[in-house]
Image (cartoon, rainbow over all chains, first blue to last red; front, side, top):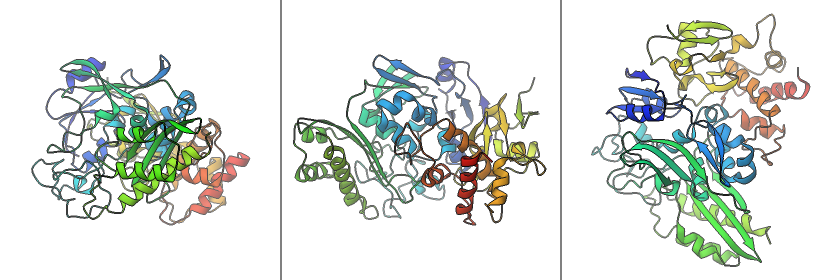
Length: 327
Length: 167
């Protein structure tokens, strides 16, 4: 690890002020950042430890819920309201990492988790995300776990997290402070960027801006499912994952919110899928059509070819499970 | 006035170099070498300790982040003369071969028993509000602790015994 100065800010405003300089990074749980600092993928000159700021509680937010940026993954998954009303969120968190890591990982940090692409974490390899202009080692390299949707000729990395996939399905909002526009709110669905020509700009956070909370909308009565397909039964990142919130009324689909992990540089949400499903009677033909639509622009560039049929089958399995035992 | 960290009940001065991980602090500054460095990247769990009673990977956190907090290591759970119930059970069930992962396994399992008592759910819980004590649950909850000797069956037996009998 390269030397750095360690600072503890007094409050969120002080933190935002202190992280606005070059080479400054905020640290909360540290499970991702310190890992990358040991690899010298991250070499901050200053670490601003926001971990003790007053943003570690979960509170009612109207009929919804406000989860502070410093609430640990464990405390979110354990929360009675999350378990009862937002089961898909509890399930995504529990499907990720290990108990030791979830005890440390925070809501804000988890949203900012960086890709697990091995060309990004190996400083001997080219990577446009780590070193703009150096090229992409994954394109044409060993790229088994890479994006099949929304990638670019600069970067085919995936966003690795689970929690944000449920938050995208739930249409949760990220609350930010410290940027040029002061306080603002961004839907989780729009928080992460596609790589395009600037793969190092992974999300919409501006210089000096920090996440203060995530708010969940009022809960809906619906079947909530998270299906994560991975290479080990525990402690592995998703090859493909599907978060689904699906309600039926009178034999027809009344609500269908879907988001996907492992497929792209961000939690993937395609509004066309809800439009295809809502108002329809569930059937294998309908589910095939939804999968066709999800994957109509899929491009796996060789190594991740297997993810295209895997995403299709996982989506159809989840839609079938979500609709077969509801009237 | 320098900050301190409490380790197994004793106060220790924070290192001057902010880069020191909690793991290196315990081993090289406090001199408690029970906590082990396996991968140093949060993948193996050999460095698991309890901070304010909660299990974490001590390799993926800085000592500087834990001022005024209370760390419990394997040395704080029991001694050769007065081992904890889990330490006794690991011996009884031969829950190790080389022993390198064992301090992390036992710290992790100590927290696991508290978590199950507090009804924390896991990925293996069919009902998020009613976690069970199935083998599947224990394996899932211990998935952050690798044992390259493969003593998993005996580790599971040791944890199960303490979970069921309290000794």
